[in-house]
Length: 154
Image 1 (cartoon, one colour):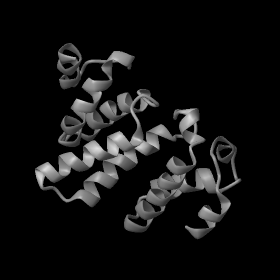
Image 2 (spheres, helix red, strand yellow):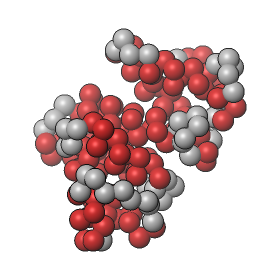
Image 3 (tube, helix red, strand yellow):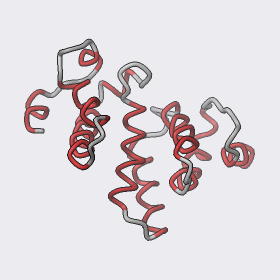
Image 4 (cartoon, helix red, strand yellow):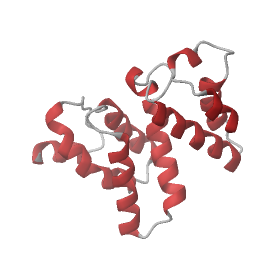
């Protein structure tokens, strides 16, 4: 655990996930939340994604929320952006995890966050993520569990 934590604390160390790293990954989430450099934060989030299904999305969300409460930081913006980034990597149509894209609750949560992301900012990233599930204009939609009533609601 200590050896893995030491490696996780360093920014320029490339690591591949192994089962014995789970507790260290969970312990490192607060450090990732507090990172100011977004590219280094994304590198660590990619490691969390590679730990799926050992590291569950609800564990990531819980750790992010607890860290933000401890820091007395505005939960909605930071939590949504970090957790949204995690879900976007996890459910990415090409580079994401196939099993995660078939989880109805994850896909629904990601779609809702994507729509909110699009409503809250002029960035089209959220819209493109939502359309990758909802639209049949490409082949991406076939990779996802699709709940048409939920998609129509959004």
